[in-house]
Length: 125
Image 1 (cartoon, rainbow, N blue to C red):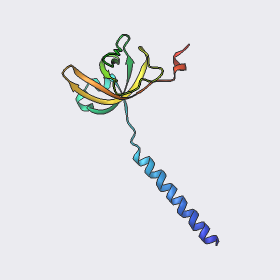
Image 2 (tube, rainbow, N blue to C red):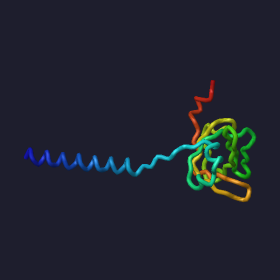
Image 3 (cartoon, rainbow, N blue to C red):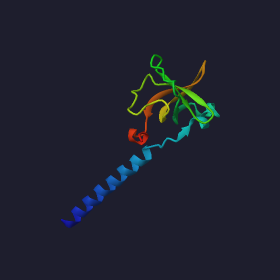
């Protein structure tokens, strides 16, 4: 009886270890890039991307659901029509945006899938 209990524990432990290993292997970490890194060679970053930048003051346009993200030297227009804007989203704050980087007639555009802001308490003094 003790032998069957031990063998069951070994089987359950092996299954749990395999499940955890599959979970870690299936999660692909996505590198977060700055606006300047991406816009220095945007062709090499086409497609799904995770960016961080500062929302330009006065750039949020609710009618076209777009805003501009800026780095040190480059900027990028962001279309946020497919996402819900989170609490803490304000002009002048640094945010992270996951989306699809595409080229259009006006240059480069990031079609946002997700917008992430920092903790609002971090911004208050």
